[in-house]
Length: 125
Image (cartoon, rainbow, N blue to C red):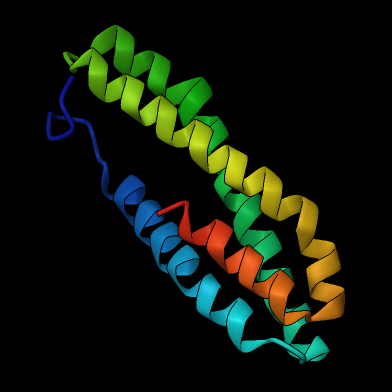
């Protein structure tokens, strides 16, 4: 099986990854810009929560449904799959840390907490 073979449409996967990269690319700036503004912080916090949930759901689907099939059916370099697993683990660690701090940061609009959130998101890139 190849990504360009007959019957395989990878357009949606590419689109989802673009959306995730774009939104997580914007979140650090948004967190930093909302320092001291609780109203804006709540809006950004709600958006961040949606994106974290979306990312977690997406990664879980890849880990449980896609990656096993790729290992079974595709001729891929095992190091590539190991690297993808490691990237997912790194992102999951960052998501867990962000998830734990998000409610406090959103409620306080504290600049230092916003900077920590932005730095954690930056590590996901």
